[in-house]
Amino acid sequence: MKSLSLLINCVIVLALTVNHDSMAIDNFAIEFKGDGKTRVIAPDSDSLDITGNLTMEAWVFPTATSGSAIIVNKENSWECALQSNILKAAIKAAEWAWHGGGEVPLNKWTFVAVTFDKKEHHTFVNGKYEASRANQGKIQPTDEAFHVGWRPCCNNEPFTGIIDEVRISNVSRYQKNKNFAVPNREFTPDGNTIVLYHFNEGKGQKAKDTSKFKNDGELDGGAKFVKSKAPIKFAAVEPEDKLTTMWAQIKAYP
Picture 1 (spheres, helix red, strand yellow):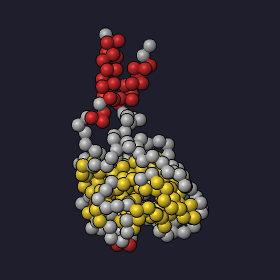
Picture 2 (cartoon, one colour; picture 1 turned 45 degrees about the horizontal axis):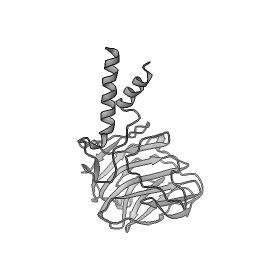
Picture 3 (tube, rainbow, N blue to C red; picture 1 turned 90 degrees about the vertical axis):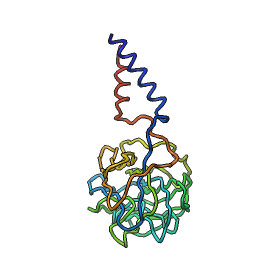
Picture 4 (cartoon, rainbow, N blue to C red; picture 1 turned 120 degrees about the horizontal axis):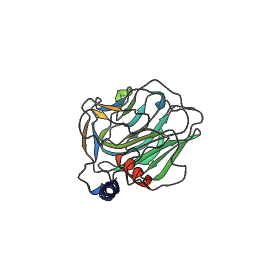
């Protein structure tokens, strides 16, 4: 009977794994109104006080830009935004100023990324290296909260549109002068992941951080979940998924 039970579990695991992308599950994202109130906010934590290498990345669907539209922000430490549809970042090391490059069109899903290697910060749009700015030194940590789509100063520089799949890392994942393949699946957390929001809760006011640091966010000011058409599939199998545990048990059975 035990062998039969394990065989049935194996069949279930394989069926769910094969059909994962075709299951009736919706991908969600967060819609921001651009009104200076809509945001996702997570309280400060030691893990968010990144002082060395850094990567900020997300899928964005801007519907309007007027001046600066914040994507992610840790005030007086690090942030990235669209400024007149150009991807830029400000990282407080040797300087605290906006620099970058790479056009991000309206009404279209675009993958954006910014990296910092303690010497320069680099911008990437849809996997293409765009620009660099010299900025040597360590990043200055602050006790400010972490925000998506908003900042706590400068008229809030709110984002108008939809943001999905936000990842913050304490490693420089992409390199200067090198293009990379645009991810076609949701990220899975690794040891360098500080924040990872899939935004797939679909309802409520909480955005779960799937990194080990659990920097969960709260939807505020009218931010809401909407169905996402970002061109990404679900992650293959989450590291802590029950399927993973079941599969490990099956493999361990003599």
